[in-house]
Image (tube, rainbow, N blue to C red):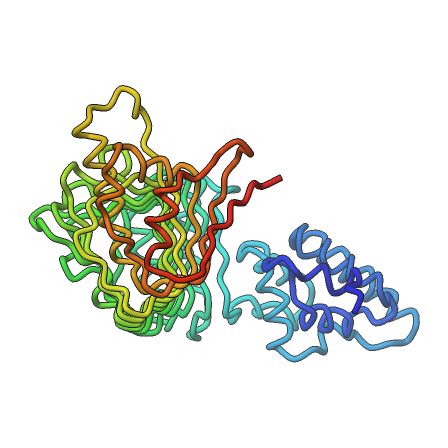
Length: 414
């Protein structure tokens, strides 16, 4: 079936859904198909454009003897429309009419951005919103800090969201921001960017017992007294975990425990400037893990990988400066990667990159001494950025020796 413009426009997850378009169509029924484009313009442009169109069509409705369809919509539909605006823009819609005066105060999704504030005025604005908002639950809280946010303001906002049963919290900052996260039983989805967790973070980590999805980008875990950290152990219902360029500078042993974890992705990992102190061991216990992705990283000492249910693995590692590296360093890095592969024994589909193959083959004769770690392998893809690359025969044997009748597929992206 042919996919038209109306269907294709919603492919991007941030574009308002067809349900929201139908709500908009109720407001401006005479626009027909053009209302879809106008709907996107309003969503992208903010409240001033929204106010303009509100009064424009309200005057047309009066001249045609029609009722004010937008203001006659139920509160929950207007709330969904306001959810696409930043909270300061949603507040500006109070001037539309008496019907709209306090609707922003009960919007379930709060979207904060500091781009039009100073540090002082933004702190004052946060306090004003929290004091004026109605005593109703917060479904989702988004905050993007273009400038440093006072710790007291940040803690006040987070405590407010926790007290109002927030389910989805997303925070992003241009600079590394100290953050303290209290226990929250309602939280299900959490995204944090450029946050630093200091001494307030105990060895038991995040206290989110009902959290199902956690995405951390350039976050620092600073333990002052603990040699071993297991920051996600208390997230008993966590099913998806993504760690991108996160730092654990003081740990001698990092543990990742996830009894319900089904998807784990780690990017930008390694020793030194990659976030781990030299010699740190990494242990992952995830008995229900189905997918493990390790990309844009260096080999580290995975001392234990417990993945009995693993189905898919993707590994992209490299080691810069191998020409200048000593034989000891080359052997150490290759053994780290082989030890990591031993934890993938139950995987059925494996995707590797040419750089990963090169790390496996750093030391002549070393790989031939190792048995194949894979027992149930059905598919191996190797992605390479050059057509001239060939996978050595002994590497192919290492990957496929434990399977029968399987082939290695070399993919060169165009």
